[in-house]
Length: 188
Image (spheres, rainbow, N blue to C red):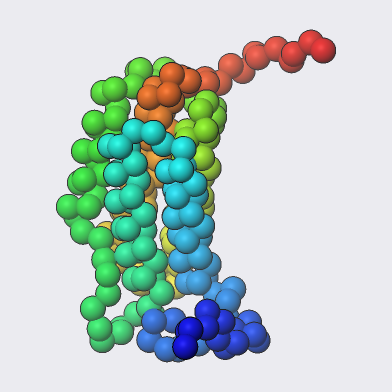
């Protein structure tokens, strides 16, 4: 027999946390891990356009750790079982990955407009979703505990995604599109 994907338990606007407790689907905790789910999806879209194996591997690692973050955030404080987590080593890995990409991209002298190649465009969308997730996580932190390593990881991930977007543009020959405050309107 096929296991059904639908449970009908959320038909009245609630969802289960990992400990089985029910909360409103618009609870801030649900909003945070839902935004991380959206982020993971945008990273997946970007991966569909990445042609470099190293960058694809880096993005896959990010997706796995984002699921660890989401799982951790889907549990209220005080659960008595071990949760997936992120570590200091994961945060350090992000920094090394950014260093690897940054030495392969031109020096940054201006604000970068999102865009360029397809992969970069989607990585910039992922970056903005990551920033939103971080803001929601900070709001959650005001009322409930949040693992400090997860907050650090999400903060570094947004920097990573910016750097990855620039790196993707180098790889596909698009280059950065830099902000020009005096950019002229096109004639048509």
